[in-house]
Length: 144
Image 1 (cartoon, rainbow, N blue to C red):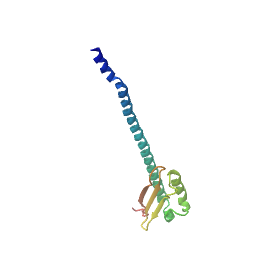
Image 2: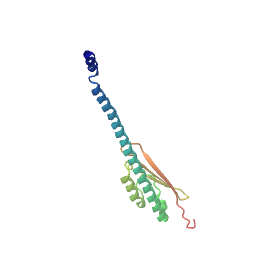
Image 3: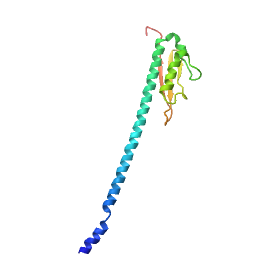
Image 4: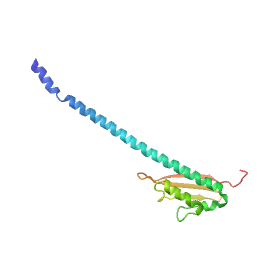
């Protein structure tokens, strides 16, 4: 009888070690999953921050156009060359605040009906290019 119990114990040797190794493996996969989620969260937070910044910059230039309606044509810019002095500070801010905006400069198109289309583009360091477009109707009639 003792020999039978001893054979059973010999077959059980190392089971606790095997169970511990499997538990460590499962916990390791869980920790790696949490780290991946955290990396995605940081990336999404950065994207959201850049979108908020682009929206604020677009709102700012629309407000400047509303305040300066006599010089509305000076805000029209295709993104190449040197912007008009009324627009230069804003363009510099866009290039400073948003990553990759120097290579993807903003554009402002103002049509004959005073409809401004502002497109702000940027490219995060580890991602694809994004853009934010605002269309504003700049009505010059004080009655409307």
